[in-house]
Length: 361
Image (cartoon, rainbow, N blue to C red; front, top):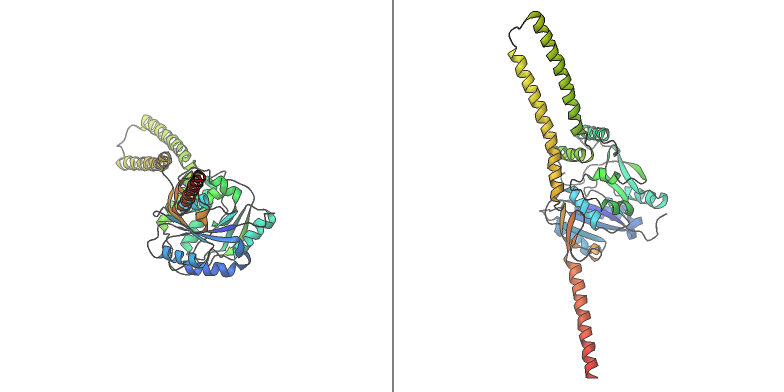
């Protein structure tokens, strides 16, 4: 059983979503009225260039439970989620898309399972993806299959995205992870603990257009595989061994044939094909090695995954003042720093007044 005065934060990454933000907030308050006193909404702006920020600031004036983490530029969704994990202080968080493809009413089921059953990781399972294209559905299922086959320790349930409820104990563990190449779907599963899936039908976007294309999804899939599996490196040892074995057989066969039948005219086509084939194999192997080396370079540099230039709303009162560094990011909370500075100056003034009164008496 959870404590009665729990707080759950809806964590919403946004990037140029001026068409959907207001609809999202309105829908959340309508669908989650029963849990309204326990909820807060935290938007993470990932460098939007439209009117997303101004709309959120307007909503903050109307609703006291809305906070904003503004990143200094576009760092990507995984970085935005990392900022939320580092800075949000609620007892549980729910990553949710602003386009309402993640049904807000399902959060009620998440909270009930988390609160009453004590499950630490409650995730949504997409039972019907008819709103997605055939190409996206096939590629998504293929990725989950390949990832789970290559990763022998971390298993991601099929058709499960970021939409889930994560308990504070898992959040605190995720805050300690220092890796720069962050694949959040697998990181959510990495700490372990109890988990449970809740099925739902994934609807279409309410407005706007997706910011993902197939090229970005392809690179995203590569990040996930290379971050959680060394099999792409290991497989080239087996490929090299097989080619070496076949080459040995071919060499022995040619030697025996020459000894028996003599040396005929060499085959130019065969030679070129073998050279091109082995060259392609070597280049692919070097490419895979380069993918790992490139990611190792980013880890060694240790640059921040995100930079939060501003924190506003109720969250600003709970984030450390001034410049604050976490394991993977940097945030600056100017509002809190100013409040504390004023309080400190006021205290010093009162001390001076008391000293003056003592001297006069």
